Image (cartoon, rainbow, N blue to C red):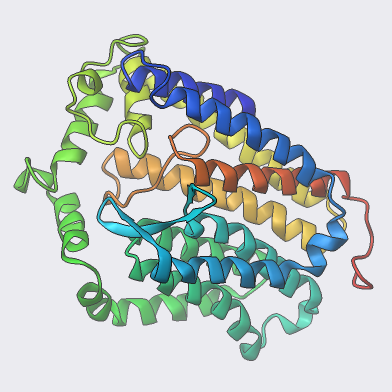
Length: 352
């Protein structure tokens, strides 16, 4: 299913470039082929080593994220990328994996009856909040939001009581004025245009209006492959990245979009099933975390392009054009396969 999603992404990128394979589709399939090799290598790593070095991996990716402030490359209105051996990578996507690993190790080592203690919330919140703040500074509201949701989801999965999240939600509501004043003016305009995109149809509301037109014009079965007028006439911006689901909806209609959603749901369900099979907490939380992360990507992207939430710049994994997101997802899937191979393992470094 992962391979099928990547092939759909290749075909969609070919269509987005009006039949030019070399523009986006070629790089997409090359990146996926290389990543697929990495997937199998990761699935064969001794999971005890992954467990042992989880905190170190988090610290290294945190340094990588912090280096964006020093060596970062400016592009698309933000500084989110760094150059490593001539290749641009986005550390904010890679750190999602290490957050999952670090939280999985913490809750694996913590006795279940101690999860409810208030002081045991501090370390997980540090793991979540530091990357969140660094990514907000870049600024990248969409990725920072997805990281926060991912971290909180893992804490809930691990057994943190729901009333603590209610208290956290109240604190967030109270601190909303501070949050509003801390985000960039263009991000404020995005949120306002989401509430009423027609108020600025040629400005902040343009992307959302064109996305809705393209999705709606696809009807039940779509206009056909390479027949999407909104994308070919350049009305639809970022059709190769954040709005590729809209392109699929225009060309293949409701049936095509539902097929994509079903594929993602199958992959997410398998992640959850593997987590149930795992005999150790570390593997269980990793598989649940990977499934949750994939769900967050998909639900935020589809909600964004269909007007259910503001445009915040979230790609559709394995389908949108972008090397770092693909690398992050493939590494995550490799970890889930590793857990499947080691689901009968009873102990990790002396811990049950």
